[in-house]
Length: 227
Image (cartoon, rainbow, N blue to C red; front, top):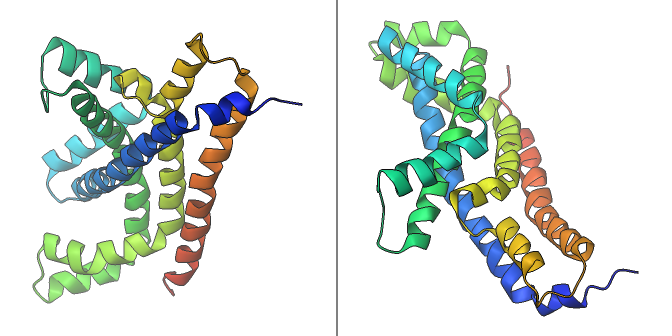
């Protein structure tokens, strides 16, 4: 049998790591939704420059490893160019982790939302133009509300993937639960085995992810668009 005594001896540290993960995931979820919505608007825009920018951003970021994106933020922009958010290094690394994770996830949000936009009947956009609505007005009042409702379930999958991707934030020097776990394993005072620690962290992620999946599944059925 595994000995979980060391895990519970350091439970407060692990709990703080999970709280850091929750803070990172919550801020990144909001910011990635904003970034993804703006990019999706660019991708369906009648302006060629905006369409090219949106397509270029999505294609580059989606094909770049997340670890590389976070390293660029933490070591490239922060350590090399000295672009900081605060004199407190932990606060600065937190926001770089948020921006890196949000910019990466936003590309996936964009493509998911764009697929939802494509499900909106073309006649509705034409009807909006016929009554004098601009592109922005028709997008905001008619197209995006329906698009969001049709992609709730895929958005939930992206959010779940993003929560799991927070474990890569150690590349940005942000101390979330994965980095806390590694630090504990490397510490000479930690006498427990690695497997009990991994099991405890895995259970913690299940507590975060399973309710999220159930909620988005329920919400997708509740908000389904009748065609």
